[in-house]
Length: 303
Image (cartoon, rainbow, N blue to C red; front, side, top):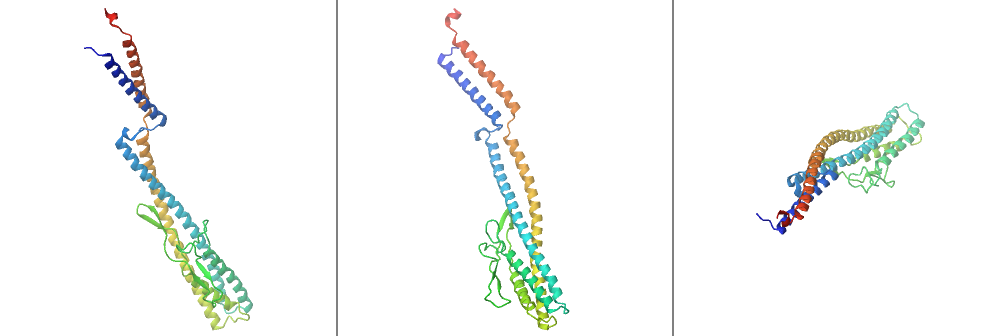
């Protein structure tokens, strides 16, 4: 069978081109460490990689959200605990003030300490975060949680100006967590303690006077209510922190599984690629040598 020179050259060129393309592909695999260079190399594997990559991106976002929420909850918990501590100290003073054996000067001195604790709670309730947003106003983060109006009579000077709406953050597939808190009803304690301070700071106040004792008792009851209010919120934060920690651990396991699967799908078998590369390089060299030998042949060589 005779083979035309043009046909022979075409076959050789195709062989060289195919070998060279395969060598380039294997070289890129070995240099990048990636098994798939183009989606067409493994369409099914590429789809699996895309799905795992999207899932991993979602898991990473969930983990970032959990970290952010846990930080906010911890700060809120610390500040609420500080207010509970102040209220607890105020309660101790009120219990002491309820003792009818106190002198008027003692009650006047107690009112000064109560005033400092009242102001501390009011200041803490209107704290801002690092972004300048009020922490205890619900979702009305541009508005102070509590307002003081000295034009109002004693016992009604403090009012809550935030709201009770909840800001939720997605921390898992279909799982959300409240990231904010409000101090609604704390104004009731501030107004009662303000009334108590006014009564105890009166010169010559009589600790045995029924009206004075009633005011102190009301302040004591209001303090218990206020402490229960804030302590309940702290307990909720503690439960949320435990749930978030468990969820974060579960997401970390999912992330590790995804990363392992992605590595298996993406990673090139360097050893097998090196062996295959050597084979194609040898075939390419043989093709060049054969082409050179045949190209130098002449009909006169066989006459």
